[in-house]
View 1 (spheres, rainbow, N blue to C red):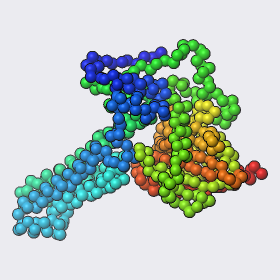
View 2: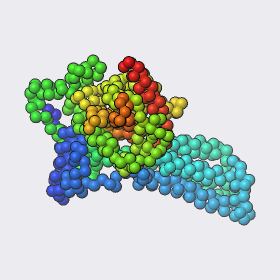
View 3: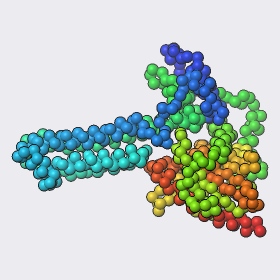
View 4: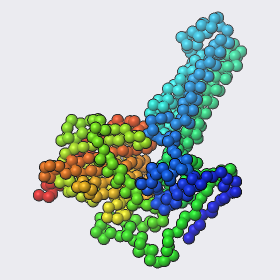
Length: 495
């Protein structure tokens, strides 16, 4: 049994109230036992609020707000434009060619690359426009835009230095000609550094803290126990607490192996579903995660129809797409369509015959079951085909599925997770299928069902989420076409 070192200092034990201490112990125990907070305890005020562990001020990509560190970056781009313009105005005033307006006219109206520095102001304005479009409007979480603006600025200024006439009488007497070029170069690289080393890492850290609070935490046993400094503590030297991983009771007995085998042995499915060889002590509590996704999907099914607004589609025969904004989640989509097939038959095909999906759905390249947890839960890996003529690269997803029947309604709920047998692949971008799933409702007509799909996906990468949301309705209607063909094939096979 391996024991992790626990670092303790006496001054760290001061001013920790019993409420916070008990709450921290509670959360730490739950995280190590199950990898997440149980559903019934996520909103348990007695366990969390007593320790002042509120998380409303943590930034999330779907909160609709711009993080504080990103606002600082955007302010830096405004400062860039303002400083460049002010220095250029002072530079034109010091040229001494007639009145101030005459100097402006020579710099702008009679612009020449070798004698005018007005292009440095325009260059800073272009940087400002592109960076604000990318990081304020589209909320990108990738460095490629700022890298492009910095590269453009660097190339332009290098060419400018070689061709600009510094030896002319007006420029040689004006030191600001050197300052404008140097400052423009420095500010462009400062913006790159600030975004890549401050904005993106800080937002990633905020997102991980939020997920840790909500139960979506790292599976690394050496990771900080509570992730967020609101949830845990650091020593004055920046060292973090690590708690030893508790060994399972009776772990020294050989009988433990038989208890673990139930997660990887299912005779009824062994021919079609591969089983993982990974030890249980290295994976989160998948059963609880599946149950959490199931409960979330059922709450979506139980939601009132008037909470949704029509986004696309004409009728339920051809398929309708609805949407609504959910606080803390973002925009949620719902596809509804009537299909001429028994709900259980369609459920069986989509759930238990999922590996055949690429045969009838060209938007899916691959689906396989990584691990069977129990009769109602498994881990599924899927790869989506590239889109937009290759502009959007393929995405892969690791999802825990919980499926079954409740109150006569067949369901398959999905929840994002990780699995040691399927780490992120170099040739794909790892996306997330956030809580949602399929619902198969019976209707008053025999051999007919109302198919409902709750969709909330994050494709990651450089794609802004707003762009994904705008195109998702078309993708879902396209899926209806493929699904109807599949239904027709199933009915023909049954005959």
